[in-house]
Image 1: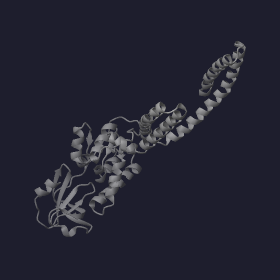
Image 2: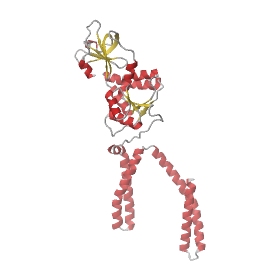
Image 3: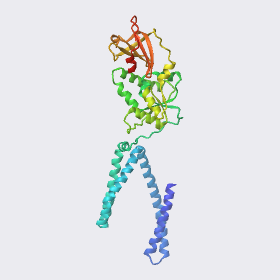
Image 4: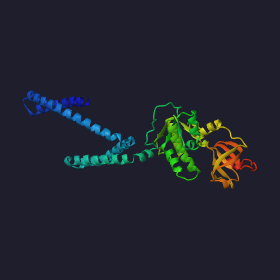
Length: 360
């Protein structure tokens, strides 16, 4: 269709041009003008088809090139080309005024071409920096697939590092789609290289994400949105959840409060897991690995499978020795989760340390 329409307009232009040229070069008037019109019609028919097909091939090549180029580079390149055109006019206009037309027109055309091309290439190459300077993201915020606003949750690192999320998903109590930002995966990977308890939990978080993909019916999507205009990870999460209309899944109570103040619904899986997990009663024996020393002298700290922190006084000698059997002294619920105080069997029961509670 495009080729036929292009040919039609080309025939009209060439036919009219043939009539005009024929009438101008001959005094015989209408006869030569008619012959010129016929020749123009034939030339337009052949040339119009050639022109239309050439344009289609050119557009197809441009489409294939543009498909591999981010839209941010195209936009930045067009803006840069426009700026280059303005700079080129500053050279072209004086040239057309002070020089002869035979020299001025080629100089003006060359200046415009050079400035437009240079502006396009520079701005396209620096598109991410330019978008960040303008307070915009070069990555389009799009949904991975259609869903209702209440179905999706954006996950932070704390939600997958404690382990409750996988248990909730396996039980079928949590079945929403999960969205993990690329910068959260990078954060977990960075922490996973450490050899301390934080590194162990980060590695466990990466395993949880993989288990959610393979062992449950939950769909897990990775979002590539980098949000370079925002520096802090928590602020990135809140902004991303707000733009995509997702709930925020986090065990960070302060982050949850901040998100809700900004209109983002926050879900804390740790609280849900605490409400449903079997209770650990005072006097009960539990087996736990103390993996690091506490902040106070003689303390050993470990974690239960559900992420609850275990604090053992006078147990620094048991740190790093593997699983040991300890007796529960008391259980204290906190904003960060359940805090379990334990002691060695046969030792005296000690009250919960207020300073320890304040630091959790």
